Image (cartoon, rainbow, N blue to C red):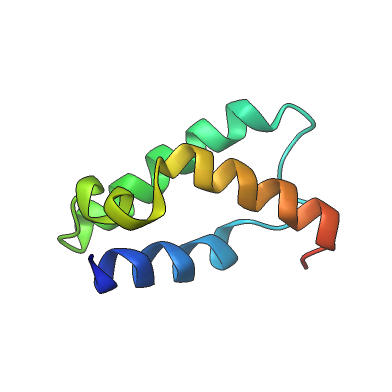
Length: 75
């Protein structure tokens, strides 16, 4: 378990995901967000494995967050 991996992605997602900032074809945007998230994590010294150990696949996690943003009307 990696607390810093979980903390990183759970703080990264609300800063980058909202109901209004991606197109209908969310899969393409989720892939771009995942690449951006991985790059940001690596800049802080957190490897992808450390995030995915507890959160699962980053792209899938982000796609689900995007769906939640729309369903729950995140700002």
